[in-house]
Image (cartoon, rainbow, N blue to C red):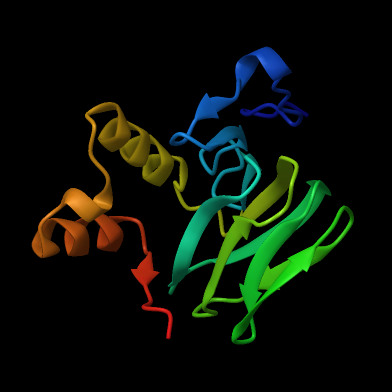
Length: 160
């Protein structure tokens, strides 16, 4: 029996290096949605001590899971910020308001799993391009911000 596509895909560490995601974080697209045929996407994320990660937001069409590898990750869930350590796991269902940051004294590393595997790598690539140009979403007009977040199924929420 022949198979038109490979049954095992392997990416070595050299295939997906860490890339900067702003001044205080790096990420690695371990398994982009294109590789998994849209089943899921997997990202390794690292955030420096006492640094912001992602402001409060939600997604309409995909869930997002967090698995802490090292350090302490502060996650907003169920209306409050709480610290989580290595081995802790959080599943954010579609439309669940969430955010993350590092309030600790050491770098935190964690995995983010998106399901289904939308092309979330495009969000991170576009964000990196913005930062390379010396801008951030805060520098955009309200119309530009709305279009940017809509392209990536990210609805920002004001904390309060």
